[in-house]
Amino acid sequence: SWFEGMAFFTACSACGCGDAEGDSSAAGDLPGVRLQGDAALGKAAPPKKCPVSGMHSDEGECPFARPKGKQKAKAPPKPPSPQEDVRETFEVKTDVLELRVDVQPETDGGVDFPWGADPSRQQVMTGEEAVGVFGKFVYEACEPRPKAAAAFNRMVAASEEVKVIVSHEDASATTRISARCNRHFVQIYRREANR
Image 1 (cartoon, rainbow, N blue to C red):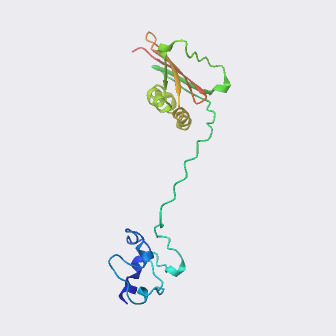
Image 2 (tube, helix red, strand yellow):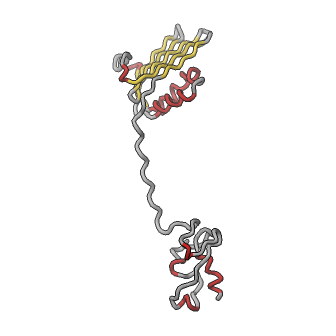
Image 3 (cartoon, rainbow, N blue to C red):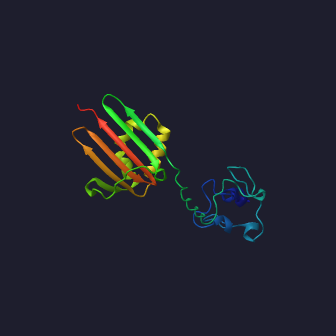
């Protein structure tokens, strides 16, 4: 019958038809088409063939079929694993620039971080803000070692809070930045030659 020739339209939704207006394939009807003959009487329809995979409905579900019903909610992302300790020194010395960046975990000790001593020189920001603001100060030293620099960048960016102390001496063109972030201390020393 004509319907048997058209049955492939409801085999799966890979061809773009199917259950756009509800599940028309489950009801056995195409939109606007009435069942005729054996199908109208509730008798089993012959196996349907998918036009994409060539698979018959009696062989199982077509791998190209859209899932029926609501999509399962994606599992929430896993919390990040504890941050590994980063111990790095980035350094560059030229005729016009001396730059040193030391990164070490708080557990190593030996770092003077006088938070609260001079509130006019301190600032609190997020990790992403700190990367954006101070990245330009350390670029030349970090550029030759991209993998270590990427680990340093991720460690700072992942910080919820970065405490920063900045001091600048105009006479010697020297900038010192001390930061505490993600259980690490970062010390930046930058001196540019007078031009």
